[in-house]
Structure formats: C-alpha cells, structure tokens
Length: 472
Image (cartoon, rainbow, N blue to C red; front, top):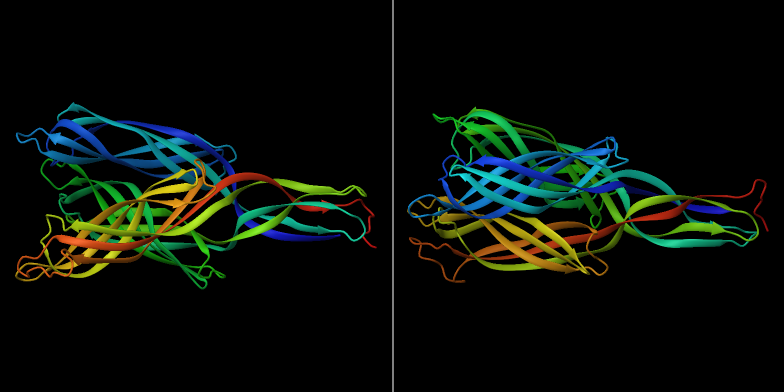
C-alpha cells in the first residue's frame, strides 16, 4: 500500500457567534461649541474594537465615535458639528476559545439616535451587532492518494481550493513621535486617557523573502485643557509606520494577510502644545498561495476490511477572488481655510479607506474614500508652500460569481496612480489670484476575496488488517 500525503497549514474555525452591544450615554456639548437647539442627524458612527480570547469567551473592548449635525441656539441658527467618543466593554460566549487564539470581529451599527436633554447635554443611543469568529492555526497531514497492488479499492476524492501557507512571522514596530496638538484644539495641561487606537494598513507589498507594510496608527486621547475652567477635550493623533517582516519563501504574486495589534501605547506632555506618543505594534503576517488539491475523503474495498481514519475539519474555502481597477475623475476644491493655489507641487500621499463592503448574490458592493494630501504653492506674495487634505468618496461593485450574503470578505485596496491639475484643464491661473478648483484623476486597484466556512471529513490515515501484505 502506498499513501501519498500533503501537509496543509491553515486556520481552523473554532467557533463563531453574534453578540449585541447597546450603548446609552449622556454627553456634554464639547467646549467651544454653541448650545444645541435642534438635532438634524447623526452623520456617521464608526466602531473600533479589539477582541481578547479567554477560556470559552471573548472580551470585546472598543469605542463608538458619533458624528452629529445640529442647529445651534444662536440668532442666525448656524449648523454645527460635534463628535463624541463612547467606550464599551462586552463579553461574548464562544465555546472552545482559549487564550492565544485569533479573534476576528465584524461590527455593524444597527441603530443610532440622539436626543436633547438640555442645551448643553445630549443622550446618545447606539446598538452595535458584532459577528465574532475565533480561529486557530493548525497543521494537518491529509491523504491525497491511496494505491494497492493486490486488491482493488474505491478511493473517493474531493477537490479542495485552499490557501496553502508558504510562510509566516511576527514583527514589532516601535514608534516614538513628538506631535503637535491639532489646530483648533486648546493646549494640554494633563493627559487623562488614551481611549482608542486604530491600525490602518495602506499598502502591503511582497518582494523576495520580505513583506513590506505601510500604514497609519490613529489614536484618540482625552485630556484636560490648559484653560482657566479646565475643560476636558479630546484629540486625534495620527502617525505613519513602515514595517519589513522577513518571511523566507515569499515571492511577488503571493498573498499576504496582516494581523496587526497594539501592544503598548502611551501619550505624555512635552509642552502645552506638543505631546510625545510611544507605540509598540505587533504585526503577524501570513503569506499564502491558492492551490487546488484533491483530498481523499473515503477508502473502501470489497476484498479486505479497510479502516479509513477520518477527521472533521472546518476550513475557509475560497469561493472566488478578483482584482479590479476603479477609475476616479472628480472635481474638488481646496478648503476655504486654505489659500488658493498658484502651482501644484506634488501629491504627498494617497490612501484608500474602505468604509463599507456588502455581499450580494454574485457581487460585492464597496464604498470607500480616496484620501489625498496635496502640496502646493499658495497664490500669495511670499509664495508659501501649503498642504491640502482632500477626500473623495466612491462606490463600486465587483462581480464575483458564487458569492452570496453571509459569506466572509477580504478587501485590500491600493492606489496605483493619482494626479491633480487645475481647472479649467490647460489654463494656468493668474499668479496673484490662483484657484481653488482642481481636477483629480486616480486609479485604484481593489483585491476582493470571498470565502465561506465549510466542514468536511478528510482521510488522515488508512489502516489495513494486521498481517496483510500488498503484493502481486
């Protein structure tokens, strides 16, 4: 008897569940903002959360950031915006979970509302649904073929389309940055708390034996302002990072999956307008390739009793994947608080944030934002160089036959090309006047992968009667 085996290294699904977090919080109108006369709408609710595995449960800790548009209680009734950050802690029962396993969270805001309690206080209610999945990395030797010389056997096989792990490694990134207090925020007297940290991966590139990761870390900090009445404020801090993680066997064309986490974060005061942020990031990287492999699912014979040792495995079966380009041409304006432009120098950075991904029958709907940082010469006598932050929302869809609601989705965007020019195109604005009107052309590549969790019996060994000799 000849057995052929193949070792698969894959993430096995331990368990999954759905849990709901209900938030109710009385919040004050931020200092510096006018009183509230009427709530117009909640413009956006974003959720940032991490999951910590414990025996048979997962601790979900995070924040919900609520952006509200309201009419101010002023004579001319201007429309204002305010932001509130609400932290939460939730337990989810997930049988089989153990420390050291990997937790995947998918939040969805099901309901949000805000009501006025007084001109300076509002009550916010948010209901968040979390899909919680716990996975672990396992190695399994599966039988891919069985051959007998002397007896006929029936071998059942099934085609698996799996991700085969080519290599994996964990790297650390240590960041220490002096950062200014954001414009418009009062100076700092005391740091109260770091309420959330979010790691955003902008680009992942594979070169031989190395994975290069570019990204950003967004941190939200609560502090006491250095003002006579000592109001409490919050500020956003953002820093870039670059990580190089060595993975022997990695080559261009393979896929890299990134699992980043924040191991340590600390924000301290340098002076009232400057803070020092120290971060330690841990980044686990898995490099994989898609393979189609025929695996033995049963073995039997009419001549001799054969015991096919089978094991039930839960795997992420790849349903479909596709890379697609998105062409964006959009007219934008330099923000009013910035001077008009006389000359465009360069696009300093370009990133893509995918804000929503929904699976329909046979396709995936994506919503996102292209974020450009543009450096330009201002139309002013001393020709200072300025920076403009431009955000361009977009919606697209990717045809993926076989996909349907409830499956799992991975989206990896990348800016392939971006340029900006003055409007009207080909016309140079007068140097003393400049212009705010710009035309952005960009090409975004999105890689979309849809998977489903399946359970299958596979043969891991074949046992024949004692004393049996397979010979002609």
